Image (tube, rainbow, N blue to C red; front, side, top):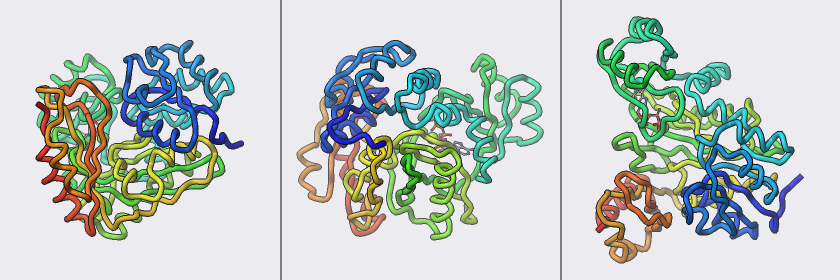
Amino acid sequence: MSVLPGSTIGILGGGQLGRMLALAARRLGYYVVTLDPTPNSPCGQVADEQIMAKFEDVTAALLLAEKTDVITYEFENIPAEVVAAIEARGKPIFPSSEFLKVSQNRVSEKEFFKRIGVPVVDYHAVSSEKDLEDAAVRIGFPAVLKTASGGYDGKGQAIVDNLDQARAVFKEMQGTQLVWEKKIPFLKEISVICARNSGGEIVSYPVSENVHVHNILHTAVVPAKIPVESAKAARDIAERVAVSMKVVGVFCVEMFLMDDGSVYANEIAPRPHNSGHYSIDACVCSQFEQQLRAICGLPLGSTKMVFPAAAMANILGEGKGNTLSGVEEVLKNPDLRLHLYGKSEARAKRKMGHLTSLANDADAALSLVVAEKKKLAWV
Ligand code: ADP
Ligand code: MG
């Protein structure tokens, strides 16, 4: 059964992803209630109501369920039990707690990829010193050690070149489960955003080519400059995830492209993704409207680009001032769109907004956005 305009959407999490979903929902005539511990959150600012509560607060989550017709989340570290509690009440919440759980743990994520025949980088789950030694022998160095759960934007991650370093990391992480991954010389990082609705309709967006700086997404360019077969393989991977998990909602698969054109899946984000922000300005239907349509059981929108190419650069806080200078300068360029998330404190590395450029080809889009972003600074 569809949830039609005039109904109320619940969003667990009040960050920028929730904000951009709320804006899409409002445009289609929905009401929005968000739940977030911080008053006046980016999503709360544009929602009809914000419930101020911690993400672990089941009672508050059930209150959100009472006030709304369908719920989603914009943050993958929402406890899966909270999502399950809403499911148990019989209130629709998407994606399912099962999908959330798989994406919250790197070991289960990789096991899932392997089960559905998607290649992943060689890895070893580490819960003890013995596992650590086995991983060193079986996979070797250099390696990337990642906490199995809770990590994002490179947090909870270290590169190690020998067993002593690996032991030190394991000790520092106080024995939490780790994943030992071979550090691979990938050619490019790419991602695919995919959506599926309850009717089983599936769409995927063009492959994005992503550059990370200090493990945080720096730029994303679409369409990715990669071989056609690799792009097809990448989209197939995302769609295979959608089919095999019967996902309802929007999710992203981050992947590595190798020299020989082969593609490894890295991780799943069970929500819209930073690399898909360009879709607001460059696609018929943005990833956020798509998320809304998917969770509401509406027909999915077109993922077609309305411009040949687009590029996005993140605007991060610098830990200096909280005023963004250069805005007027940047807006002089008619092929740019500026998005700011309403965060008052521009703490270092905090995602404050993004800039999207539209152009005739990927190279032009990227050089434009990179050049223009240099004009912005926090003062
Ligand atoms: P998260 O985004 O959750 O912090 P990722 O697994 O995406 O974790 O890792 C962050 C970044 O670290 C990746 O985007 C990539 O640049 C780099 N990285 C991760 N795993 C590997 C690997 N096995 N080999 C080489 N680089 C990696
Ligand atoms: Mg990542």
